[in-house]
Length: 210
Length: 246
Ligand SMILES: [Fe+3]
Image 1 (cartoon, rainbow over the protein chains, first blue to last red):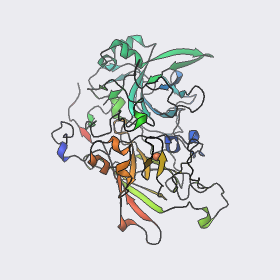
Image 2: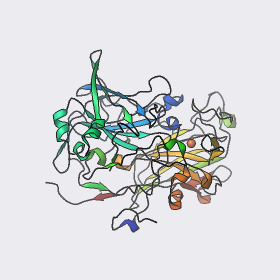
Image 3: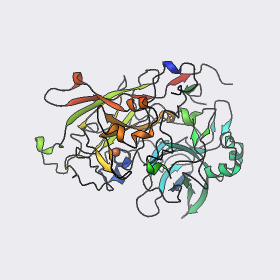
């Protein structure tokens, strides 16, 4: 059996509980409305910013596509992002104007788009002092996905910041880096970014380990 | 530069199921073919995560015997779900054994007949008018959580010609950061379907299956009421690096 990690204290560590797929009915637990269940008083969902939240209000939409080019219609996504000033705010409270955490899902019918209502995050400075371009962390859970896939959404109109971002630059292939860039659209005067996630094959989205 | 003097024990990707596990057929087209890109320098993007202490929980959010009833007029045992009453409880700790307090634990499951209350589940077994199948709670100061529910039934699913899921409860835990986020399933000790299940078999190490097995705890079972199953969740350990960043 392979030794856990390469860390010297590994033998003294408890093993992490193993992951299992969230399965086709993940919505029952984490997206009650999608499952057809009555919602509770407070649910964690896709409206991360209320109108009074500070920053540029944006909508983020996309699809999830499998290795056959087919829509993944049962995916659940989780978003985690900094606020407009580039600060992560852990306190989740539906009473406050902005929450950095949100959930969304693709749909069984129609275009199967997931959607978030949020504000554009500010740039975040890393511990080594380097500045990461504005981004939203996304985790994808679904039937057939044995452990969540972790990616980052960056913004097309932040070209300069993107070019200097140490995380984007950790992706060696410039073509693959492009899979992390959301495209800006304006729809009825509102700013919308489109970010389609390809799980496998041509145009496969970059997924991270951390 | 919040929290950047923190790190988590590296996630052992050989311990978790691989993305591509052909015995579980749906994983074949949903697994990346490229390698994951490793982030060498952790940042607040991974080292922080939501704190749900202020998410208001309903009175019965962790009590699946009570939190769903098609006919609210039903009282007493007429309003209770069918099946074996159980308590599912445990502790959320990190890999150093340190309790994880005030973290969100969510769960969902099929009813006693193996049927989910989900638009897409068309299994023959009937819905239970008194069972929804969803629960959530926050761990206490010492990392303990608890749910009251019924034991879910096994159910068939299209994979091999005759694949059945062992009885299981889906469990989701946040932990202190995005890095510790985990979704798993609790199986029931002694279930003969566990070793036959293609989803369980995505794990290569039988010891990893042990980490997903709930154990009968007679001491905490309630006489004339319900059996108790203990299921501890272990999330990635938090390391302090003790170095000042310049
Ligand atoms: Fe299931």
